[in-house]
Structures are given as C-alpha cells and as structure tokens.
Length: 189
Image (cartoon, rainbow, N blue to C red; front, side, top):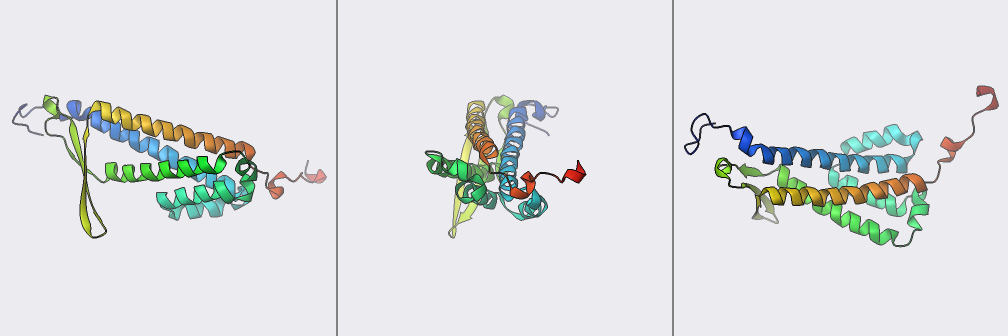
C-alpha cells in the first residue's frame, strides 16, 4: 500500500499490527464466550437431546443464545440447585445485561470501518460504525489507542470470567437426567 508520508515501500502490516492483533483476540474471545453459552444450553437440554440442541443452536443468533441461556439459568428445572443460591437471580440479571452490552459492542467492532491512515506516524486507528436505528442514522466512533484496546480486552476478560464461573456452577449443580444416571443392566456389564 503506497503512502505519501512513508513512501511506496512502507510496511503497513507492521504499524497496523496492534489493531489486527486486537481484532483477532477480540473475535476469538467473543467466540469462546459464545461457546460457553452453547455448552450451558446443551447441559440444560441433557445428553439425550444433545443432537436436537446442537441443531437449534446452529439456527440461533447470539442475542437469542443469550436470551435462552439466561432463561435456562433462571428457570430450567435441571438448574434448580443453582437457582436456590442467594443472589443467583440478580447475578444472572447482571450477566444478561453485560452479555447484551458486549454483543452490541461486538457488532460495532466487527461491522465498522477502520481509518488506519496515520498509524505509520504514531496516530491511533479510528473505528466508525454507522447504523440505522428507529429510522435515523447513528454514527458510533471510537479512537482505538493501544490503551483503549487493552481496556476493551480487559473488560471482555472480566465478563468471560464471570460467564465461566456461572457455567462452572451450573455444571456442578445441575441435577442428573434420570435417563442418563440410570444404572446399566446387569447383563451389559
């Protein structure tokens, strides 16, 4: 890519590397969190329904997966032990709000245009996301300094940790599916 400031042989990948690294880490971390949502929903459905649950998950948007996960954590009979924990519902409500906010941020990051001109002289990248909401055009713009990118990844790490803690609690407190927990026939041993 030619650049009148840096010359025709300028190495854009070197100076734009931090933004590409940030985007790669962000996408991988977000997908890992979505994977935890999937795991919670598979657990809620039970092993016998795993195939049907996987088919359903393949058709759900991230927003629908968040909604289904929150609903399961609050109402699924399999998770009754967790639901009986003090502050469980308020914790799940806060998790829901955080996941929904991160989903919106994910959309603004992944559906954005990036201004990289100037990174070759030390300027920060600029993310711009245009969207139509309620008939009006909205513009969301953010300067992505290395400090800001680290903040975003730190916030995401905190959310991922909270989701993983909820996932772990549900895994350990889930009631056994009676069909899965049945003893094998004496003849099959």
